[in-house]
Length: 59
Image (cartoon, rainbow, N blue to C red; front, side):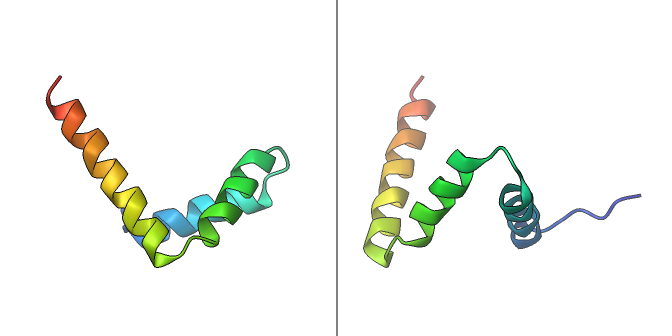
């Protein structure tokens, strides 16, 4: 039986697949952009995600 991965392990496994993949230029570029975000940009993304979540709850 497989042990359930925690969030950090899931992210590391996914990142490893993306980095090691041969057909994932978009994913690599996207991860590069995310790696360059500062704290303020992450806070802005979180606010946007909260807005999207609230709009989905209304549907």
